[in-house]
Length: 160
Image (cartoon, rainbow, N blue to C red; front, top):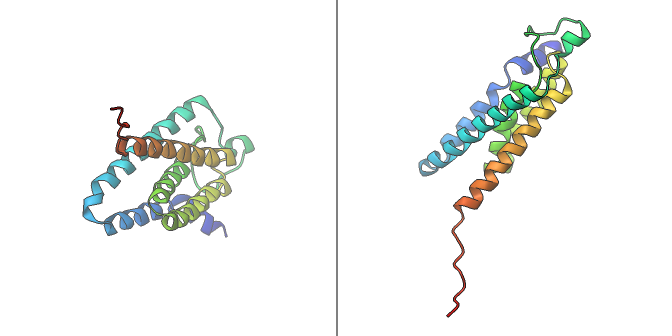
């Protein structure tokens, strides 16, 4: 069982990247620029907010406070937020905005990666849940702002 969680914690994060990449390539070429611009800006802003979160909240890793050896080697630095969980949940959120079915698959993988990071002893639950919340909030906000700015302006009623 440990091997499964070790694999999920260390390598499974690549699967959502691959899935979203394939989905992207299957879309009409004319939408690629819009999709890529949104995905890259959303991922970058999510990462920046995650960095700020890490500066504002320090959570020692479980193996540091619990004095045990984690199942995968890791530096004893700040555990908040989980970079792996931040990445996979950002990808899942981006995928959800394009397709609920795609998003569902990506969220399953995201939860599995997050749970595995906790299981192997390199993160607390707050680290991975916080990462997911950051991704959801930031990407939802970007989507709302983008939606508001790309809607055609209403014509004002005639006052003549």
